Amino acid sequence: MPRNHRPAKSIRVLLAEDQGMVRGALALLLGMEPDIDVLAQVPGGDAIVDVVHAVLTHRPDVALLDVELPGGSGLDVAAELRDQAPDCRVLLLTTFGRPGHLRRALAAGAAGYLVKDGPVEELAAAIRRVLTGETVIDPAFATTALGPGPDALTPGECDVLRASADGATVADIAAEFHLAESAVRDHLSSAIGKTGTRDHREALREARRQGWL
Image (tube, rainbow, N blue to C red; front, side, top):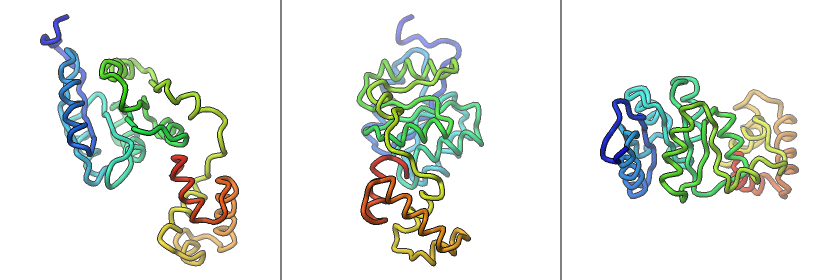
């Protein structure tokens, strides 16, 4: 089929990417595919609110999201779309494949997880494949990210680590999550042990590096 001839029904794609040059290039290149229509672009802002609103407004077949969005994460957006727009398939794009991100992406219901530096033809093919019900994972890091690796943090451990980022005390965190102070200490101690670090500050940095937060 000639590239300038569009079929009667194109795949409707929404693109969320905060870097204008990358967003424009992706929209241009994908728009050259005969069966793909980039119907909306979201620059970021409040990631969850803006992207979810755009998806509910435009009703794309596929939402193509950057993992790192200002004001939120593409992973959080994927989880929100799973509940609010279950018919929309989500493909996540990342610059750096962190071990925890792929696990979180799949848990959030994402249909695909790809690195940004791949050929646009592969991205277009992935968009088509997820519409058939496939899950598409970039082979560049799938084996590493889904391998045994270190134990991921529990939701409770993640909560207390995030809360400790701004200097909150154990008592503050306990009050915020309605936990006993001993439970907060146990969560922090477990997180430090799993990350192989010396204190909660190092544990926080390592958890972010692993993609668990």
